[in-house]
Image 1 (tube, rainbow, N blue to C red):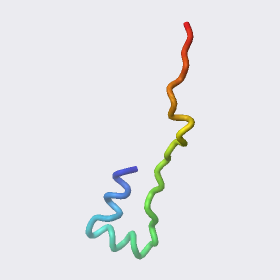
Image 2 (cartoon, rainbow, N blue to C red):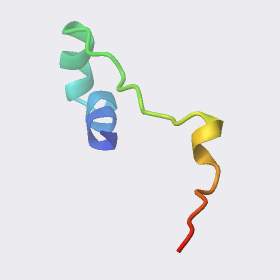
Image 3 (tube, rainbow, N blue to C red):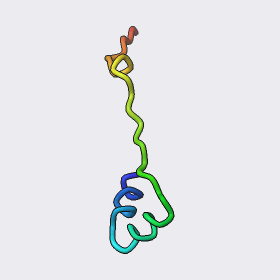
Length: 42
């Protein structure tokens, strides 16, 4: 969704986005517990 945020902040679309009250896209961020390496056994 990086394109969405870039387009929302670019001229002239920022005028339309501001008038229509478009909000910034909220990115997903995983919690720290799920970022630990996965233990795999073969």
